[in-house]
Length: 160
Image: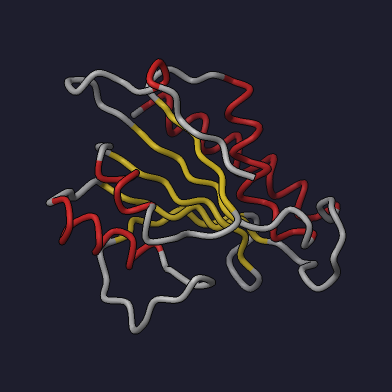
């Protein structure tokens, strides 16, 4: 599942622009927390905020984030803080690239090296509990954490 950005959704160069990328696999229970939050925020049509969803981060996301002032990566967390954590990120060196594992820090490093872009970056990690089965739908606890994360990020985005 991927939500592309149309020309009309892109902000003018002078505007402070925010990209939120919700990633994870909705068919793996709570791993779908990132896309679930992205879907909820898309429905709100927040001005100055573009939303993207994907199953995983890829090297192509470096180009996407290079066009924004701020990027927020949203993912599920198996052992993170409850109900969520929100932390700044910096560009980091990836030990390797594969089609299944590109970290937000590696995407930031690529944006920096390839496009001379250094957006402010954050990771919103929403605590999940059930990841093992091939099954759509969030666990009850993860759904509660999603509500808390949505309330937080909506307030953060409107105050930024």
